[in-house]
Amino acid sequence: MQNISDFQYKIDFSRRRTISITISPDHGVVVKAPYRTPVRAIDRFVIEKSDWIKKTLLKFNSLVRIDGQKGYLDGDSIFLFGREHKLKLISSNRQYVSLADDSTIEAGYITDNNAFKIKVMLEAWFKSVAQKRFTIIFNEILVKYSNYGFLPAGFVVRKMKSRWGSCSSKGKIAISYDLIRLDDIYGEYVIIHELCHLKHHNHSADYYRLLSEVYPDWKRIREELKKYVR
Image (cartoon, rainbow, N blue to C red; front, side):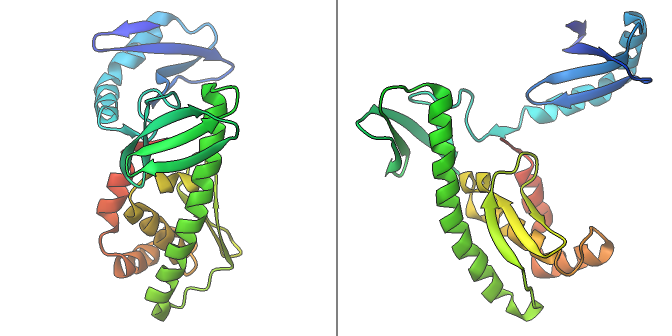
């Protein structure tokens, strides 16, 4: 690790021709550089970009992790329906996940409460809850905006690593089950965003005119959604 005043960065040497910088909430500042690049040259490059790096790192301070700071241990905080819930692990003769009350998610395990296994259980449950809840919301949206003639080929809730939703070239709408962790308004926005792609399969001016007509508050909701980290 290298230090530059207010932050640290990691150097990743590889077979490449130029120096680049990536910044992420999980991995921090990573500088990718060609083999044999002098460290002093890398330092100069980082210093030149330091203002941008600091601004980006500052934005990360406002990010909200939907699994809290720890993850899947007893007593950890986990987001669901836009609210923090406490995870309660219980030794049981069967595996299950359920809402114990408005602020507690209960997970029963048979012999092993390993965090990874609990995570697998919870994610399967999140997906099941999301499929039921968002299918209802999706159908309600189609009825509400029926005058726009949205005719999707299908709807599915699934795991998505880097996106909240998608619309295939054949008109099938998919959204991330992680949206169940947030307030319904974000799931509604993503669904409407993708439905508008049925009319304009791009991000052209025509697309945004349609989106603004259907969902005038989309810019604010999109910015709020950016603060959540999976």
